[in-house]
Amino acid sequence: MTLESCVTTEKKPLLSVEEAQQRIYDAILPLTESEMLPLKQAFGRVLAETVFAPIDLPSARNAAMDGYAFSSESFATTLTNVGTSWAGKPFEGELNAGECVRIFTGAVLPENTDSVVMQEHVTVNGSQIEFPTNVKLKKNVREIGEDVSVGDALCSVNKILTAGDLGLLAAAGIENVSIIRQLKIVYFSTGDELVPLEASLTRGKIYDSNRYSLHGLLQNPCYQVTDGGVIIDDKDELKRTLMQAASEFDVIITTGGASVGDADYVKTVLEECGDVNFWKIAMKPGKPLAFGRIGACYFFGLPGNPVAVTTTFDIIVKSALVRLVGAIAQKPWLLSAVCTTPLKKSRGRQDYQRGILQQTEIGEFKVASTGHQGSHILSTANLANCYIILPSDCTDVEIGETVTVVLPSI
Ligand code: AMP
Ligand code: MG
Image 1 (tube, helix red, strand yellow):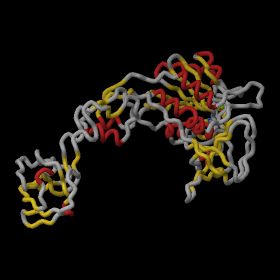
Image 2 (image 1 turned 180 degrees about the vertical axis):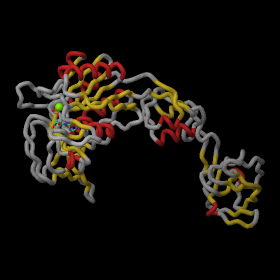
Image 3 (image 1 turned 60 degrees about the vertical axis):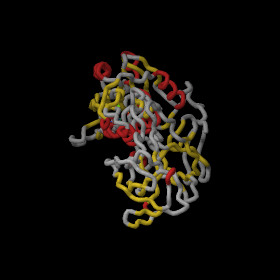
Image 4 (image 1 turned 45 degrees about the vertical axis):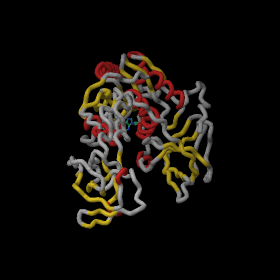
């Protein structure tokens, strides 16, 4: 499914969302510096080097079932049990023809055995074990290296380590791994109207909520995140703060002040102390979005409206940060869903309307609007589990029309 590129009604065409994403992708140089970390600390982090298996897995032939082990070459329907092979305590003796051993799951198979029959299929008469005549030979045995052979790649460079990866690496005895260092991110709110939660509200002031949203959005073991606080609407103060931050961090994220109001200095300051790659995109919410660099530091100037912050983060910033930490960003899955509520839409920008996606019993997707779509309306935005993507030249959507949705968390 392709989304049409931007057709705008504005005088100067705005960059489409796809073009903005591509420009960020092209501009970003992923981190390469690494650190050695103990396995548990590497969870959720990005591998800096491929890890190869130092041993075979399994490293010894072992039983897949609790039962009796014997050699297929000397199988008879009655065998004498001559000992036990426990998980962790192998049977060390030799088996002669007509003999078997009791064996448990994970226990090493005695030297000259190659078959295990599960205990439910035998009859035990003291040391005499009776097997069914139709027993399948050479079964229930886990062979050396059938999972992984020495030298196989266990986990490849650039992989984000999952719980399963930690298990696999641990199974191969890997204690420490080489991991891309954390991305140092600082975020700021901008605006004279913002007060901290501890303060009481006076006329015209609002609580600074964007830094709380960003705090949540930036929870990721790959990031070392600093809350830089609030920058007042003063150009020199903004410039001084951003220049200082650019010397200490890999990424600066600001919210607010990115538009064209008299107190919006973000774009001007970025021009003066760095490079503006773009600062407006054909996205709703989220038109005033600046991207650029200050020295070696990447800069994302997000809009001030709270819903525009979370939306631009999900759609634009998140994949950029994933690329920066050296991981391979997965393209989010787009789904087709039948719209169950009418949607208001004007031409010119690609909308990311907040929606509630459900799957019917027969597997069809249905989506409803969360309600009021204002970029300051946090309460309904937070009911959403998806974005409904409406291309820039699309207009109102009627009930029953099929729309494209994207899940923010992928
Ligand atoms: P701006 O882009 O600075 O013009 O801000 C757009 C809107 O978002 C205004 O209504 C601001 O008051 C609001 N806003 C900006 N920053 C924040 C913030 N940190 N928390 C809550 N609302 C904000
Ligand atoms: Mg402002």
